[in-house]
Length: 275
Ligand SMILES: [Zn+2]
Image: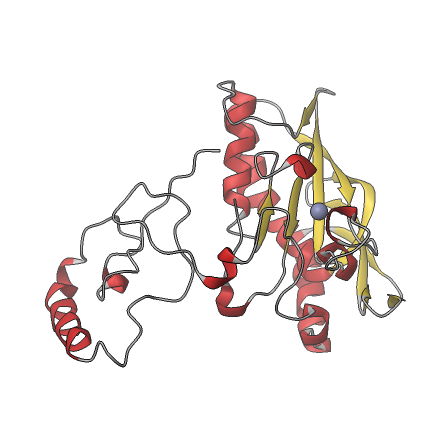
């Protein structure tokens, strides 16, 4: 899948000044960047020459940045955790704030009893998400951590609905078919290996959207699909990385040919894995 992002040239000492604005320096900061560049050059033996994270996914601007350690050790199949179970970090206050945000957004959900299966699986404060804002049914209802559900709502409102409206004017999403939410299993259903983020309630797999007309938009390989439906799927997949820390799509590997895997796994340095 083609990816295009503003570049952050992390091999240069003035990296902060070349990020997010294309490759042009912000005018008012040019002199400051020169001063910092000179300073960093003078102290280069003791300071890191590369910003830690994240790196751009494409090489469309500037020099290609070296992939960080996390990326070198992960593959597209790697959707498990490396930085601890976020359940352990979710305070009661954080959950309450999330729950209120979800409610205020208009989602229909209910809280469920804490669940635990074996030493690796479980959700301390699970919710059962039945409906997204605007009456979009979650089919079937999904058991998730609140944070996962809230990011799903934000992605739907911020990207999926507007993209659908652009691609198919007059249509609207009435249902979201999820292929997997909480389930105690290893990554990619393997017999061994690391535990999937699904086992913590951090992940949801999106298989299809049901539209008002009754039509269905199914997640499928669309790398070279020049239809509006293909553009819609590419757009929402790209945008998903703004809301989720892991995004795996049919272009990632054979295990994800029929769905989008989205999760809120916490990684060291805030790194996101989205390709
Ligand atoms: Zn998944």
